[in-house]
Image (tube, rainbow, N blue to C red; front, top):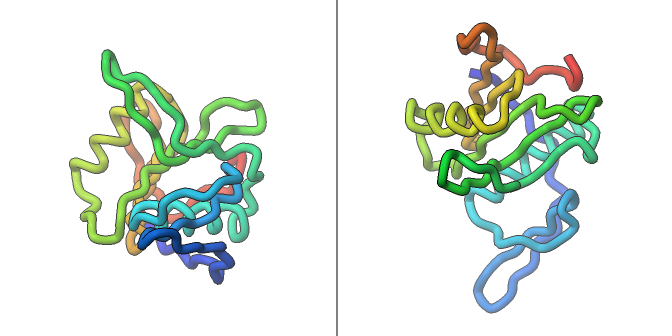
Length: 146
């Protein structure tokens, strides 16, 4: 497991007709504040503020194809050469990070090959590097570009 120390949140949150929205600074728009979105926004802030990842290298919820199915990844970090480098799957805090979640990100990896796979529910975080078709557990989130 990887220990994550999230930075102090500086989120913009608004309430509209009994629903809450959070401003996503990367997408530059208001999005529904779901439990999964809360995890995603905190993880984004961790990547930007703690790990110093460049904001322009992070893609959010883009569509990918898995055979005939269309899916959306949560976060994708590109290398400085604009190649997919790290894929991150965010789940709400009450979702257990089990083989099902790991299987999901591995399927996404088939469509978007990367060096690093991360799964998180905000409370727990697991990461893997992929080498020779083997997942090697990480003890920390890699420095950008490593």
